[in-house]
Image: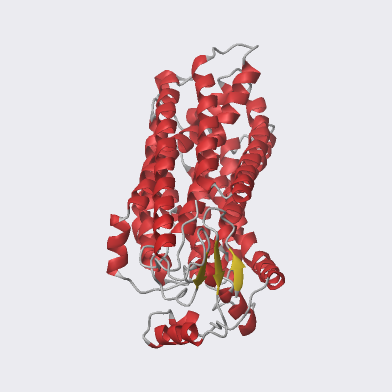
Length: 518
């Protein structure tokens, strides 16, 4: 197998020499000793050469079967969560008699459920058939979204929001697992941007649905109730399709032949991350807690999502506070959704083009910081409203923090138990950040929320500093590994054999073949 790593400052050549008996024998020994997942081992063929043409054919095969589910499931998750923001200006607060900080608390309680569900769900994902598990989750939370429509007060809404968060807790970890299970590392930024970009598509679709519902005048159902029923019903349909058609793994997929399964798995050999392994390895767990890079992910995640979820929950209230009507605010979600797609796809494209994901991440956060400064300092008037709206859109560059950071994590963590631990840590802090985010927006500060924007500015600065620290850690580790790597023929170039690519080694254990990308 031959391939060239795209990162210029690493410049190593990945290869598996089919004539090299030592490499093949080492892999056979790993299989014999149980180091390689038994299901995966059945379909390994280290003599298979994946050239560019074959690589494209295999990727297209995977895209047609897996990518639609990544897109649909994440679309549903963001659609379901966004219904609260849309319903906030459709009469939800008045019809359910919400007072003071109660609306903010509804934005928070969902992530309390998310946080509680996160630790067990990451272990469950490692053990159970992933496609079936994900399908059942989607059906359950879609039903819960429909149940919002029967809530009459704050207590009822708190209950369904908590349950929604609990059952949604497995979605992003599962999608990250599917991304690493089917795609090469250099493809992760693009694939994650595709499913993360569904947030922008959701804004457009939900904006149109919400706008259309403003013309509904029914004596038996409120418009916000109709919104929850429509969105929840669609989610249940997607859940049923997922349960039936999403494969549990490449090895268990009934839609592919054994030869195709082998090609799909061998294409991932250069990842040095394996495909799956249900065994729990305590040494990998301790490594996750001791790895400085993991703690960088941890603090960046919580800082980023304090901002992201605060803006998401209060987006329509902020825009309406700039002087726009309810219908104008609903329609402006189309523009925000389109702008979000540009952010997701644009930042992923630049990250892959430059091979500098950390620098692109820092740049997007700097743009968001600048937009927030404008929102904080410029007074509202009919003349400044368009400029402030544009500043709000620029502040939304922060949404790229999720997709870019996740692409860094999926590409730089190896070892199935370590991945599970890091994912749990990451999404616990995601939940914590999302719990805190809406509370920064105090009811008495409406509609400008100057305190919240001031807090955001400090968090942006912190996030940017941590991004550069993470980049330094990766650069240092790669430098040491290149320096110590045996067989380097010239400075800056190295040849790497992938004969232990499926032996479930962590990124810190696999110093010989694993290189960080940032």
